[in-house]
Image 1 (cartoon, rainbow, N blue to C red):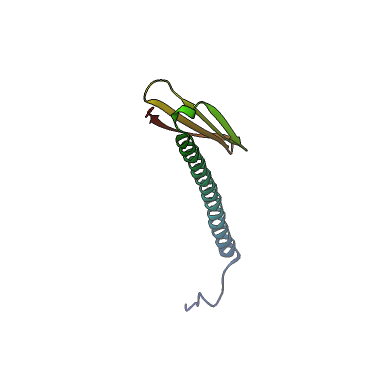
Image 2 (cartoon, helix red, strand yellow):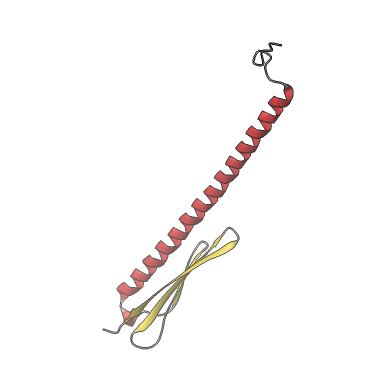
Length: 116
């Protein structure tokens, strides 16, 4: 019995199984791209939050200790709050927070400020 398997082509079942396997692969790839895009956006917003916080810290330090105090700055969903502690050296604490897709992203930056 000499049968040529390749000359008959593919059966309907084989084509359906191949389409299913291909579809699952495409769906998995698109889901992973969505997750990667979300993480990239989250990372971008975290970087922006920290950059804004560092900029505010540098701005406050440039004023000098005698002109420092407590305050709040809002820009959209970004909130930056700062407070100067008591004593010498005093702790200057800057807290930044931002809403990020249903969760709150926050970070704190602190430094000591001397009177001299």
